Image 1 (tube, rainbow, N blue to C red):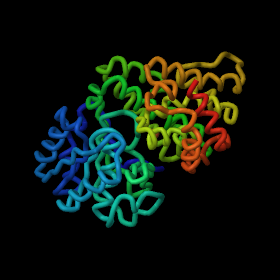
Image 2: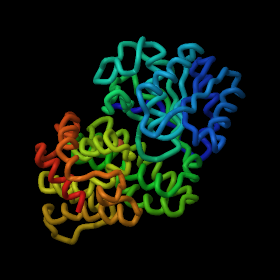
Image 3: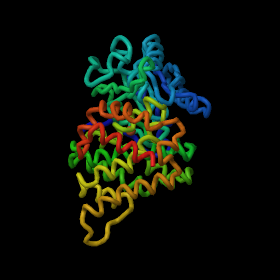
Length: 383
Ligand SMILES: [Fe+2]
């Protein structure tokens, strides 16, 4: 089983951050976060919690939406300088990914770029505490930190068992002010993790359990959370769904949707959740008949129960329909042109090449996908 060492869940749980970090034995702490958290006062609130526990605290607020190697190295320089024994990642997946990377850069030399790949980190990092303020990425329980190299625009993950967080605090109250668009986008990322893990060739009874728990919660709560953000039950449901989707992903991997989504982020700066939301109905349609029983069950979990006696290959089609309806209801971009970043036919070759290069998710896909198939799916996503 792969996930965070300990997870605390519940409204208000984030107020315990200071005492929990202190219990890890740390005396000096770096909080890694972004300007939004600084502006809404959450960065200072968390720093206050750490200070109140009698610890030294520094705050790095420079994390950008698609975090870079360079930003990570800047945060790591502060962490090394202050000799911190703990790093807190406060925010969305970007802040948590940078925090996880900074944790291992305290104990491993050089730039983050050196560790992009699988299993390249030599030494365990310092204590990592994750406090998500979105519900989607699952970064609070995964072993990956995805960073863009500004030099060539390529996104690459640092993938190492040393990146699993030691602890995560899931506090639904921190997500109630998240705007509808980000709630929808990050929620669809969680959905992609769960559905892709569920239909991955690496799926196991263990990952299935978490994927199913994520899928029904998202089917039930994503629209409510996006449209009625103060509903704490919906926020809690989505936060758990993101956690469970993250555990499913950590254990079974993702598939072609994430591979196809990466170039949209790397080449055009499209937010990760929006890219997945846009592509997943198309990828689900493409994959449905390769694993009809799975897609039929997923449709049912998402709230599209099958007719009595309906065979798998028919019911499976409704998974794609369920996803398309969700994207429409949430008001997310449904076609590549709607993203407004100028993606045209002339880009599809390069995008397909980059998607094929995301090899592990492609290898997990239930249906073999070629470069030409990638182009076909991108083209369908334009219509
Ligand atoms: Fe994702």
